[in-house]
Image (cartoon, rainbow, N blue to C red; front, side):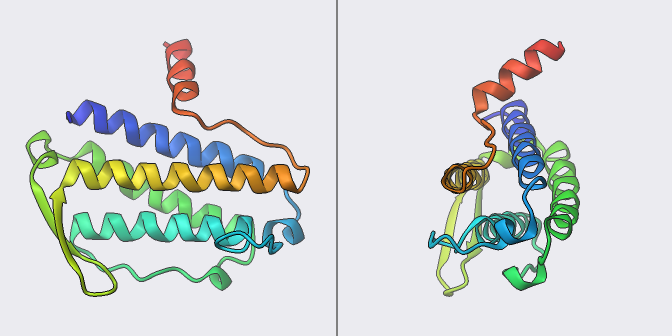
Length: 166
């Protein structure tokens, strides 16, 4: 994988997060926090899970420490958006500054259970985007379940939009 390809993938990931957060911002707080019986409760729990995983993966790549986030620390969409803005800034800087030769080098990390793994950095980075995409799809399904507005965050839509902007 090239640096340009990973940069496109992460530009897409940020775009998709922002598109979804824009729609989530229209929810009242009761719907945002409503437990719908999904893997992480509902919209609120799922989004906190995604942000938490995003931050943990970035911390592994930058050799910093990050703990799992708690849903209770994000009582409103605005609080969540502020944390996501900070993450987007960090990941954007990381990706733009990443030397291409580092992408295919194995990078060792240890999960929260103490298991050690080593995969090329580009595979870990692809996984992170895939994980986010999976859960964004869950959130869209939850929004539909509640009868709320939805948005498409498909990669091809990002590419089309990017082409139209020239």
